[in-house]
Image (cartoon, helix red, strand yellow):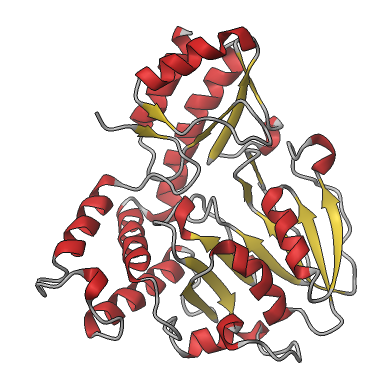
Length: 352
């Protein structure tokens, strides 16, 4: 029986994408060679890379607007360092909104290269809300935020209005909802939450913000080098890039970001409605800041934990144990999560 995969990441992927990817591993483009054994310099893979980057800019409505899309490595964790290397001047300041574990890590890395000011934080209540009131310092070069907090189940519904550069870690909700993506100067996202398997990281950067820091940047950390080499300065992770391309094609077929947003709203509504109406459960995140990607909740009666755990496992549900920082349960319902799987979880909750 196919599991109902609520894992926070690596995440669920569309079945048709998995099918096409598995076929490509055996025989790619009728070459009688595997995707993972052909040259990344071959015309067949160069076409994959170019198409993947083009789909990114198309789906984010950033084509012909002065942005480059890159598929890099090292996860969002390396971007915590690459961002300040590329846009924070020597002696400069970066402003951060701290909404969880990953923004905390980004703050630490940026602090190695310049001054960091945390202008808002929800740490006081274990990150269960998104701070709204803050002042952006006039001497900051950029403002950094995390759009969705996988561990704590919160999501930013609006973003800072500023004349500073705006940077956003969108690792866990990229391509899930319609936004004015041109408000951001730099977006980065690990693929393994909503786009593909672990192993590649998407960076979308406005070209004209680069090359202004006065820093000597190590080659592997320099966005301008990666742009000039078309994401092939070193051997790219061919399989994750290919699967990401397939997922972006699948998303385009559903009506793009606008189309999937409607589906995601419906899916999240089904689960949150059950949490709010069932006295045995309680949501963790503040209602106004709830994530449509990661739904965190706890039992109101811990004596029922053993029974509930047995029930959802028997129903073929996988990956809903909450992160140790929060406890309880976390249902990650990314783009590829079918509504039917959410209904299975809701039915179990009703039956408890």
